[in-house]
Length: 280
Length: 215
Image (tube, rainbow over all chains, first blue to last red; front, side, top):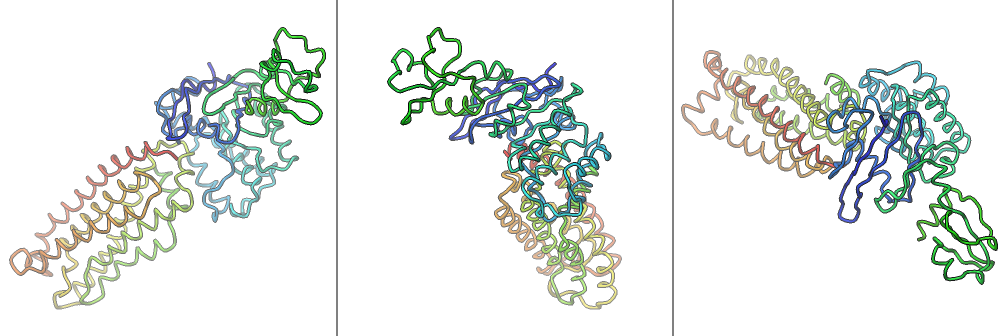
């Protein structure tokens, strides 16, 4: 039973179409949700949790259909949409005291330990927090009610490298027991290289791939060489070619029956795959 | 639901809302239209929504494990409690008015049970127009206030007209006589029932509209 199952999720805007988005994530894994700005990551997440009224499709968490039982699903989900940017003049303590009442499994000890770990002062007001601290506070709220599924939209944006590293460690700790899952969208793909088990890549509202990270990375090779080596039969396979003074760089599907011995090839990074695919 | 009321109490209620709750003391102003205090109270409900909107309460609340329709229901109950409290606060001032002043209020109705019945109906109208208008978008707040304000103004003009036009109706509605006031109690009861019924229907329609809003 997948922890998250999204099936044919659609949402039509005048200038954007979330087109039959489908993916699934099993318990105990981390899925990175990648795509460039405006590709539909946040819209997908918002449609999944009912913030955006979708035009079609189904979303379920465990065996519970979200539309049929929104409240029960939300009890099991920890949500972080960027940082906390509501009630900027209220103290953290006030927001927490209100928020915790809504969760039957709120754990004060977990919350206290997260405050300490993130170095958060409850007497501060929201607008006294830096962007990174706002994300940390949102995470502390999301992680303190034993959510089985964490949905995080750009959780690492605005964090310094040390905090990002700490956060990624925390993600690993969370899924270690095998009962909790994390879906997080990001454009900082280096974070995913470290912790994501699965990658779902969205482009212009459509899911391009949704599979385990290694399969995703093994689909392509980074290729570079001299421009005069470019032959039409090779060029037709290259993706997102960039020519420069010293030659060219591109992406090429990994399992082609072509002799690439005259070129430099390497396993691509997520960044490289995304950049070349987007370049087209 | 109690959690939603607590949330609105701790996060949405602005200190000025408490000041507005004291406005029924205006019933002690001699020769002054009794409904004015409740115009201010309706304005106070608008400020409540403004405070919530400016602080992105909709986003915060939508992340909580609460259905969108329940968020509207919670706010409806909160506003109705606020209105009820204002009526309870007004009652001592109305009694003082009736004991203290010996002549009839030339500016309109006396603070008698009929008056309070009409105030409940005024609340029902305001809530209906304002809630159903606001929750169409959950961010456009000006026009719902204009329409709701105009609606209660029309209602105010209508019920005060009944008092201003000399005759039996005026004599009955504008009475300060305790025995007549006893016969006004059905108007009060009808006002309360309309207010409760309208509140129920309002949150149903506003909730349906809000469920379709993208946040």
